[in-house]
Length: 331
Image (cartoon, rainbow, N blue to C red; front, side, top):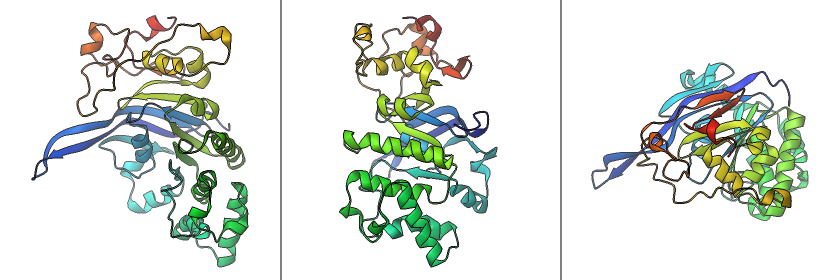
């Protein structure tokens, strides 16, 4: 990791509410609180992992940071600039610095375009290269992601899932971005291929000085690649800590439950108390009052049902939203 004190991105009070319309007149009846007051920061050169169950808002958060989705409220501050206040011209310049790698390598690539044109697309939009310069750059990018340049004239359907994801990665790094948002980039791949893609991302991060936001629904991939981890539940970040601190001692009951679900190969730790998260996730259209997690929390008390916990820094660079986090720390 490079200069860990240099803040690259800060997200403040980020919200995304989707309208729920019903009837012939599409009358607005309610909102889906997809992302509800999310706060985090990313330092230059690090990887922030965002983890949570399906529907928790992690991909929506990534899409807002990647400027693919307009927030309802909040600030996205990149290099001390609020992206929501930039002119279209300045925003276009920033777009080349923030790129995305998508979850599904099968649907994220245009099946009618050859690999050459897929990777060339952002270069043609943002750069003014000669034909030879463009060819050389694409050949260089394919080499970086472990693909033979002889594949340039092939179509996506001629590649495996792992190879398609490498094409998507080549496209994402084509403009030499500062920040790459990886939206579940290995979840659609075979387990045997996942580690190859994760190792490729780590290699590129080191060689190209990249900063990652890595989104996943499972902890193993996030643990492998991340420096810090944000745990999301029902539209909110409930815990944010370094990887080491989080796995050593989770402070939020939801995080404890996620960690308990991860298989532990060391028999010495298998007998430790397990926290099973029971019940279903409440609807984001009608979230619980008080703490969002109280309906499934084995430690919930009366205050949890009425008062939302603050997302507070309980120690250096460690944040949690739980009324009883410190009391539960050693349980």
